[in-house]
Image (cartoon, rainbow, N blue to C red; front, side, top):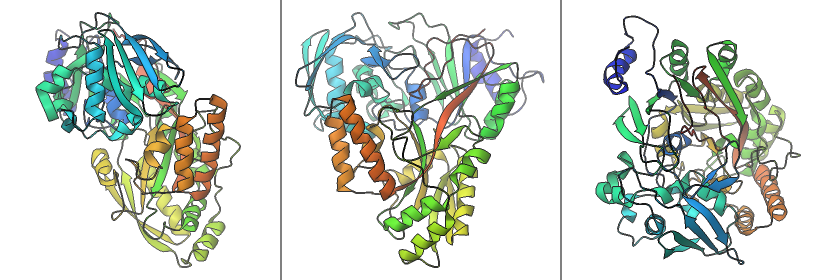
Length: 521
């Protein structure tokens, strides 16, 4: 077409946004640049600050951590570290670092930079700790400190044994070890608008609500990288994403609306991808205020909602009914024998009457328009509202854009709402319960508190033996199921669609979108 991909960003994209296209032709994307229909506006490019998988899908292409997941697996392998050793007491992890790695700003990666990044998050006295907040710092909570043993060797000391440590260091938050200190020092609190890592791509352009663009990092240690760049276009409305995918103006789309999966599967110009992953879509309940401060009302809500019908008719079989906080994708830790709450409106009404609500209740229900891991949230919210009405619960829906929604419910929905939709993708059975169910946890939006649950979470984190750890998480699942701080709705099988010409694009069970091996004509 005679245009560079950079000129396309400023000219061609504008034409597409306003419906003009190029000469009325079917929309095209530039050669060797992948255009992604993204589910939400980007919040931050700082791995230590990010909280949503939609942000980490971008971040994962800018940063590498000490470790990474193998293709198609949550098993770990070397990345910026080439090897590691664990002390006999499980309290010290010593990493040998890859030599010759430089950040995308040209500064060197070393043991000193790893130490600097860890201390930035865990040490309030660090001169750049104020570039937070760091909502996922709980993952690093057991870290006592880091010691530089040599330019290419760093020891990370833990306060106590922490079973998920290597998994977490390979995951999204673990990429904070690969942040350029020079970039943080240059941009300070604005670092999240600029980024700076040692990954396959680097930030080229960020136009809020229009596009965020990455270009190939020519100094990438694990190159070469085939793509010239990646354009992430935030398109929160799922129907709009579908239209753009079918029109050819985007190359890849994740989190497909269930109604469109069969259409994509039947299109010879598109490739449908599906994969199970550790995901849960649920309703957070405000456990500190009536009516859901009473466990009987929380259980009643679980009986009142027809989850089987939602999975069949709304989600079109792209998910299964959830039975608790540990997704079945963790087959070693999830109690698959535990039956989900059945649809039983009579049981719901009986529990409501027992709890002192024989005539029902009025509640506020927060619903989001779109967001990472959300399953047709408006349609699902409306169906849930209708089911609740059948048992006498009047739910007034308040609808928010995704990032506004997160600001409303994190860290608390107390004083605002009684019910809120939420979803999580996670890389370890510990991560989600610790983040959302432990007393005082940073995303415990319903302010749930149960000493038995707290004790099980702590025990699971400190138990290294896999079989003993699995038994702990199964018990945790049973206790939380009975206490019902959430309505357990669905576990999604992630999906995506790509143009046939896109090569090397794969889904990963971590739900990250890792694009360094992707190419396109």
